[in-house]
Length: 121
Image (tube, rainbow, N blue to C red; front, side, top):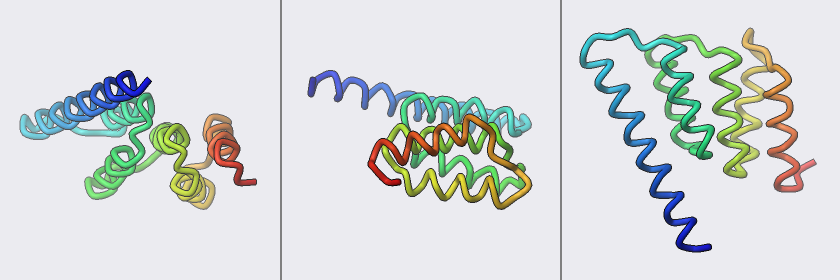
């Protein structure tokens, strides 16, 4: 199992590096980075449970004055859930429910799963 875990970790790091390179290439070519672009990057983070990278991307969006939406917040929340980071997931969930973003069924389900995973009820 240890070798498989190492291989999966390596793959997730490679995916993250590729995502960063693509975003950097787009930016250097003056291509517009928007919520859809970040949703694609956040989707990679969500798939591999790369919660730190997902939070980083949300921060980059905020710095770039790109409004967060239900989709990108739900993807980041799901990345936190997959990594067992229920407290970070809760922070995103609170942001969603206390702003004009709103939390959909996917966000609610991910939040419940994050808490359930670590026995936090």
